[in-house]
Length: 143
Ligand SMILES: [Zn+2]
Image (tube, rainbow, N blue to C red; front, side):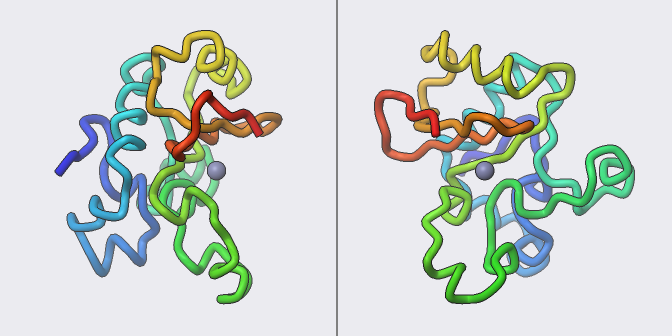
């Protein structure tokens, strides 16, 4: 099993999954996403995904519990949950705050240097965070 070098499992799954699965919650996350998160950390330094486990992080970055793996509580109804094909639902996406860099700068780096993060399938444009995912998509999709 791949466990991130730079991330605690609580940073990547909602509290519900952590409470019920503990360390096995790593199973919910795509290895390619985890490898890419570590690679982003190696290049840019500290990255915030979820904050539910830390009052200190919540003071700075707000309450975040669905920014990695996303469960049904993110959605207004079960019907909406079932309709969604968000990459977050499959453990293949992270909405990341990269401390010391803007999301726009990191997106530009990813587009200009695809070999740095070869497992990324798509990134979201025009948002203040870096959404990347490892969907089965080539070349890189920007949506
Ligand atoms: Zn996202």
